[in-house]
Image (cartoon, rainbow, N blue to C red; front, side, top):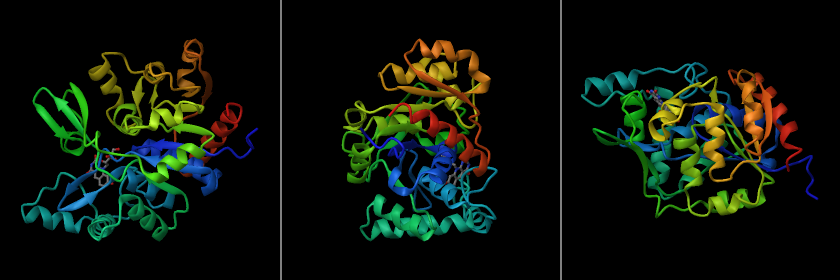
Length: 318
Ligand code: FO1
């Protein structure tokens, strides 16, 4: 019998909600019990720099230096470089802050020197005092491409430049057939007693990880628990609700999130907010163990409280 009081958790995360949930777990679980596997489908090149927004958002959040208003980028940030880039006729739609630039310059340099993304992320995290393993899902590029009636575009152009307003007709991943999970991700999935899907966008944060060859096989024998990123039919941030409508032509709800994952028979447990407690019985008919609790994650103290309730819940599932 596993030492269930010390379950090893592999958490899948992307975006601000994912980072905040990971931060709650990281406050309660030591590094040897928590691996955070992060989406890299949002990665792109901008100003000649290699940008990995979801890796940086997890790293900054765990380091306690993320901008609390936006959730991404750094607090106490300036934008002098951005101003000058604009005056030089450079694009300015992706707001890179002055302090944040150091991360992108360093990542770009280290990648150019031959470090892989996992090594770069480890070194950046160590420099910022983050002890938990922040694991890119792959060292290979596997970029989310958004399909719209007007053509396709990379994820950041859709999400930031177009403020995720274009109507989606589909998604695809550039490089998916050549991309591999990293040895570190493989090891984390094999060692995990439980897989946890953070409250991230199922389509552009969790699916890019699940799509990678071998991941579904590595997790199918494990208990998987997800927390809904949709509360009261709405996403806290970003296009998740809009994507249920445009991609699946279904109404966004905690139930549609669970059903989306259950089509692949993925989940054993599901966490929903108090606002959605009327969905509990419907969810149990999907064969799910359901936890109803607060799932809003505005600050580190609340993130830790939510994580504690979730860890108590999942300890009965491993
Ligand atoms: N999101 C925005 O909506 N506007 C921005 O200008 C912006 C800049 C930015 C810079 C660095 C970074 O790590 C993230 C940034 N984001 C910005 C957020 C980012 O686009 C999203 O958080 C993820 O890609 C979605 O998961």
